Image 1: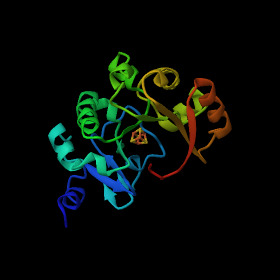
Image 2: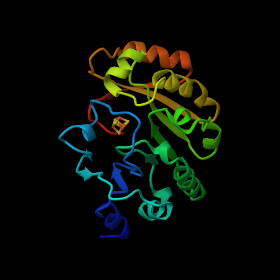
Image 3: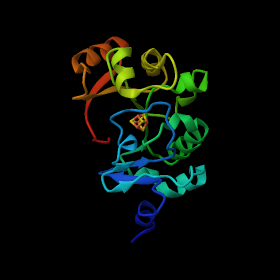
Image 4: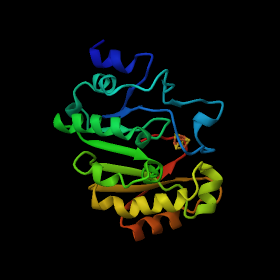
Length: 209
Ligand code: SF4
């Protein structure tokens, strides 16, 4: 077992590989309480065979140690059962560390970073984040609220605005929605994404990526 294997098999699953991508699990906090999230069901926070339960929120040094050599992965993705922009300072520090070592950075986000942080955080991603995958999740606020149960008012319009502004700062921006959830109109989500100037990806329930 090499040091990377030792890291990915450690009790605290900070980094977990799927294919040629490495995923980072930096927080378990969310402002959404999505009904479809395994974290909110009896299944618990598990992806493939990885248990993403965090004993503590890892420090920047713990995260970089868990990554090892960033250049060996096609992409390093901030994605766990928590919203990475809730730890935006740590996210930026790790992303800068990855970029300095020739890695590529993707952030999977709920798109509520501006609402939660009470400022536009997108300019701070410029040069640090290569790709954003934003959970649009629904074509309107009512359907979004039904499935995501946002804790903050105005969440769906905030996601839409985040998507509208993101391409100014991040080269590749994708909106996603999960096919098969009651009332979610995938074609309408796709159309909205197109109007916002971003690409769209249909996701399948319980598939991470
Ligand atoms: S934002 Fe993601 S991690 Fe948080 S509750 Fe929703 S699906 Fe789960």
